[in-house]
Length: 381
Image 1 (spheres, rainbow, N blue to C red):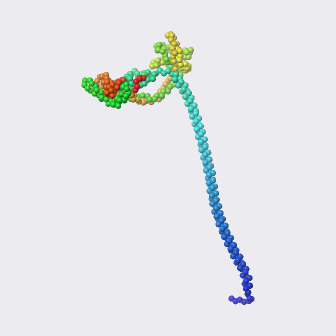
Image 2: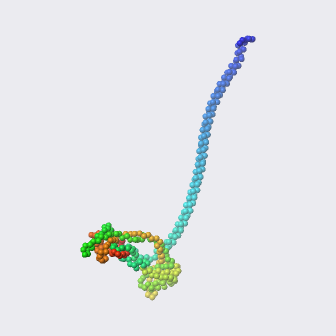
Image 3: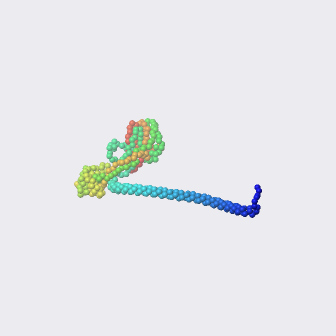
C-alpha cells in the first residue's frame, strides 16, 4: 500500500485517536461501573433472597401459629360444647335424682302411714291377754293317741316321731351319756334267761322335724272381744248366759250379741257383736266390773281385742335330740316287758357307757307306734 498526496503528520493521527481513548476509558469505566452495580445487585439479590426466605419461614411460622390458634379455638369450642353437654347431662341426672328422691319420699311417707296403721293395730294386739305359759320340748316317753289328732288346739303341743318294730327309744337324764352311747354306736346286750344270750343292736340319733321359722299375719277382729281372767264358780252355760246378758246392755257399753263361746283350752270367752263399734268401745276400757245376779257376786273381768291369725309362711327344719337315742335291730326273742327291762338295766350301768334312764319305749317286731316329744319346763332335748 502506498501513501500519496499530502504529508500526514503525527498530529493528524493523534487527534482522531484521542477521542477513541476517551471512549474506551469511559467504556471501561462504564463496564467497571456495571460490574460494580452488578455485584451490588447480586449482593442485593442475595439479601433479598435471604429476606424472602426469612419472610417465607416467618410466614410458615405465622401460618402454623394461626392453624394452632384455630385448632385451639376449635378445641376450646369443642370442649365448651362437651362441657355444656356434660352440664346438661348432669342437670338431667340431677332432675332424675330429684324425681327419684321425690318418689322415695312419697314411698317413705306411704310406708310411714302404713307403719302408723300397723302400730295402731299392734297397740291393740298388745292388749290381748296371754293364755299360754312358756314351755320347752322334751320326750316324756308317751305314745300319741288317735284322739289327739282331732284337737283344734293342744295346750301341751308335741312332736310326733314314728318308731318301727324292733326299735327302742331311750331318754337319759344326762345329755353326755346319750352322746357317749351314740359314739359307741354298736352295743351288745346280755340276756341272762335260760342261759346266757346276747343281742347286738345299733344306736342312732333321734332327728325330729321342727318348725324353724313361722310367719303369722294377724289382725284385730272388729266384731269380737276376748273375755279373760274369769273365776271358775259357774257352769259353762251359766257363765255364757250371764256374760251375754251383761254385754248386751247399752248401759254396760254393750250391744246385740251375735255369738258367744267358751275356749276350753284357756277358759276364756269370745263374744261376737253385730255392730263392730261395740268391740271398739269395750276394748278402750281394759277391765270391766261384771255383776253376776242371782249369786250376788261381782268380778273384774279383762276385755281385750280378739286377734285373728293366719300362717302365711312356714319353714320346716330338723333337730337332733340331745338326750334321746334310737336303738334299732332288736330281735323279738322274749316278752316285751322283760326285754324292755333288760335294755333299761344295761344302759343304766356306767360300765356299759350308760347312765340314769329317764324314759324308755320298746316296740317289738311287727308293730309300730309314734313317740311323743312334749313341751316341759324342766327336761330338755
